[in-house]
Image 1 (cartoon, rainbow, N blue to C red):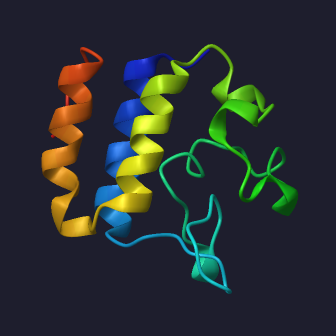
Image 2 (image 1 turned 135 degrees about the vertical axis):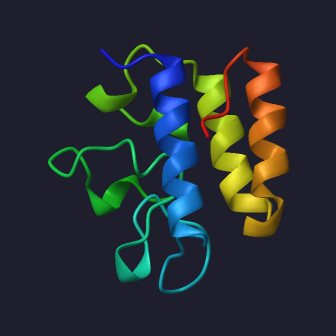
Length: 107
């Protein structure tokens, strides 16, 4: 089972590498968006667990094994970071989330 630190590390590294938001064709953020992009939560969802019907579903309502046992408040913080902050602000936000949930920001 994945730990909160493991999930946080994976999300931070994913967002750093992608360096842009995952968006739906009609607008709005997406777990899996255009051009193969994924949001912070989307990168945790396994391909065989993802379904387009998940879009616009709050993270607390996603019933996928990949999220089982994780701190949903931390996940929602990471989702909000992706959805409401610009990529240039993400590094500062990573540190804020890490401090709030006693996690380490990966290098």
